Length: 360
Image (tube, rainbow, N blue to C red):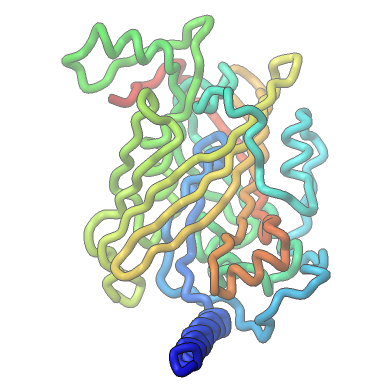
């Protein structure tokens, strides 16, 4: 009898400590770092790569601790009114024009793990990206970081109407493989587009280019990516000991990006192409591990041989972190996107170049 009573008391203490820990975690402000999306949108396509932007950017304060049975209500808040009526693809319209958005799903697990772009994107491009609008479908209350309200995933101070110019590269995977075998002693080779070439984004070059031009607080210094071995995984290194604007050291950090779903669509006349990718990023720094989910959808429209117009949407999702405020809010919105950042991209082929240097 004594043993049963003692065991019951121990069980009660364990349960009390468990629920106390959960309550503290939920009630505490979310110490979340703003994550930058260097997305396929930004990479000229639809591959969201997350880049850490700031330290301890707390979420908006909240008194809500327990998810309601009815869930979050659709009550959008806007920063900038904008609507793109010229989208040509079903994929582009369904993802970019959606008012509420569920995470992108992989259509078939037998599909290729690489995202192949339209042949007209092959080459080197100068891109001018303009932020046209920010939309919070369930209100700013559900946004995981203040920096996503004050700015955007690309820059914590980016405002609607601002433009940024950067370079993007796309190369032929097939030509790259052939030239790599015949030029084993060369660090890079120059290739031109073949009639059956599969065009992919140079994720390493594009990520560093975007990070630099958006003047990110902790810019990407190195990208480890092997499209032949595993095109769905990237490792981002942010350099040693970056500092904040007030010179506080952030410490070393790195991020692992896992691209878990992708879709694409070619318009029948070949003049338009849309692609979407969703990724999960695990950012590791001193005493901190942050998981973030984002999605990037882009529709490209060929205007001329050296000119492309594109529309891009970056969608930010919450993650179902247990015993956290974000996990509670994730239940409220049923896993749907809590923020949209819509861009217009004007792309001009760099000096009329019809070739690019392929990565090693």
